[in-house]
Each structure stands twice: as structure tokens, then as C-alpha cells.
Length: 112
Image (cartoon, rainbow, N blue to C red; front, side, top):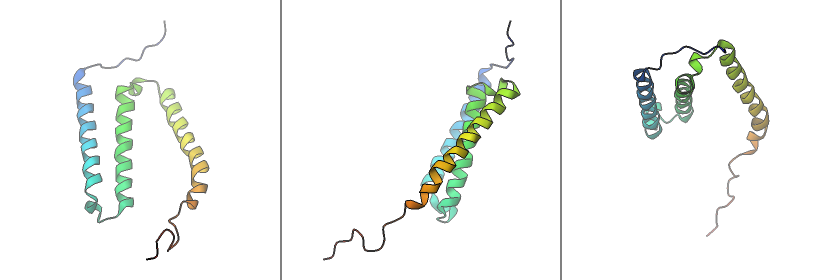
């Protein structure tokens, strides 16, 4: 017989997580439409939105995908794999990111 993870399948726990996800999503939408909260600094807004998204993904993975109840080796395997994927993406995408620049002044402007 194989080892089965023991966990609580109460519906209340899932409703609390669903409510937290709903509140976090509402906060993300509100921040997306109200950029003046960060005084027009889009970089800070994106940082906060990324942090909220990471929290939401951790809740989804932990509770709805039942990873919270898995053995530690399984959780570490997922964290290491995702981190390695981000590192690989960094080396493939960011060297070319400096090529995406706005056009020089005057390009695309029709003289009248």
C-alpha cells in the first residue's frame, strides 16, 4: 500500500481560500485602474501586482492543487524547477530586451 497524504477536506477551508483569492483579485483590478495610488510610478505598481500574483498562485497551488499536503521533497522539486525555468528565461529573453526601443524622433511623423 502506498503512502497517502492526510489532509482536511473541509469545504470551509476552500471557501476561505476562494474568498482570499477574490479579495486579492479585486485589489489587483483596483490597483490596475488607480495608478495615482503610486503617484504615476508604474514600476512600483507592477512590483505590488507581481507580489499579489505570487501570493495568489501560492494559494492556488497549495490548496486547490493540494501541494500543501505533499511531502517536502515534492514542494522543493516544484520550487527548484520553476526557479530554474525563470533563470533560463532570463538568459534567453533579457539579452534581446534592449533592442526593443522607441523609434528615434521624427520617424513615422508625416510632414505637412
